[in-house]
Length: 215
Image (tube, rainbow, N blue to C red; front, side):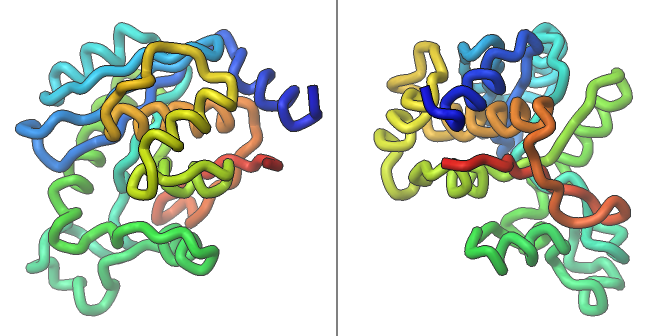
């Protein structure tokens, strides 16, 4: 076993559970949800905030990794276009600009199509934190890039095979793309718990967690 494989095994075999959520902007559209523990994952699709909260609490996670912006650009006070600071402070955050410089493309936090997602993510994170859970923001696409995995847009089947090659066990061969991104979010949470991560952005505006790995 190589040192990289050994490191991944150690990260995955953490006895603590990690929940990953690939959030959508509306309760009418199902979000991907995954819980990863001891290298084995369970996934599902969940629509409402109440269900997301209930399933997550039941999993008793050491950390919740949310694929959604969890903060506003510095200076902004609202997700909407009528925010008086929109033309001064913009629609993106430092973490997104840092990822873009590295070739990791993501949507700006407050383009119109992201506004409801950002608002929902912030509200869910607030609720989880109020109940004593640690919540981190992650970006499955960036995590996949770092781990040498294809993004779902290129080949969902190859992404699933790549996750299996990492040693993640579970019945997810035919899981939906949002469940696979939730699994990837949970994987980022495992790297976070193991201390093998990088935090992009800044404390005041908000941090985004990416794994640090040699692959």
